[in-house]
Length: 101
Image (cartoon, rainbow, N blue to C red; front, side):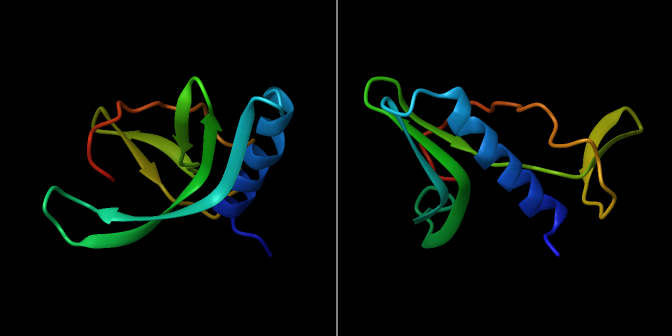
């Protein structure tokens, strides 16, 4: 049985190619990378759920999250859950920095 997180990744991976012109965008699912987690730190391995590459627009990295969103003490918190939901929530872009995360 596939985990809820893997199911969400699969769903995004299936739907995104249909929304992008195949001749202009290249998609790389489960892209592995190696780099420091902080400036001057040792290299560590990681994995991005989906990387989209375009010759003119650059690179867009997607990390798919799943679970239930809840509000506790006015702070939004993500918590993993085995419960099923209607699907992945909306993407929340984060600013890019000069270091690997």
